[in-house]
Length: 201
Image (cartoon, rainbow, N blue to C red):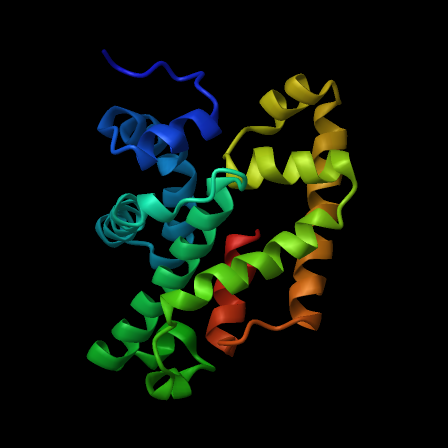
């Protein structure tokens, strides 16, 4: 029997940990579109963006036994897709020598690939910034950026006007960008910062 769409994320993660493929499919349907929209902003290639999103969900399935049920999975997916995109851009720079893709980042060819073991620590940095938001701004960020909800639907769920949702999201994004700038990632480079900036648009 297929999973209904209104199961809680925690319930789905528990079932995924138990190896339930239907739960995995339900989570995929919930987050696939928003991850794809983030990646396509940078790659401008539907096929490449789809490949990265697929890799992210494969990684989730492969690491299902270590999932932390107390933490939202959308941030983990967001961060891993961000790193996979960085690595893909670096690979293109090396293979195609198209430094015009990122004009001021020709040195990126010498940069190491992002070690996925750093995903956790870097997600923690993102989460630190989000946790410092007011409760309403935090919820707006989670709904609109991590879950891909429209302003209209977020406003309806939170009992706010669409204009207020837009203002809260802009203020939240500005705070997160500034926080990240002041607390750079361990593996940060200009390329990584650029990708994050686009992801947070």
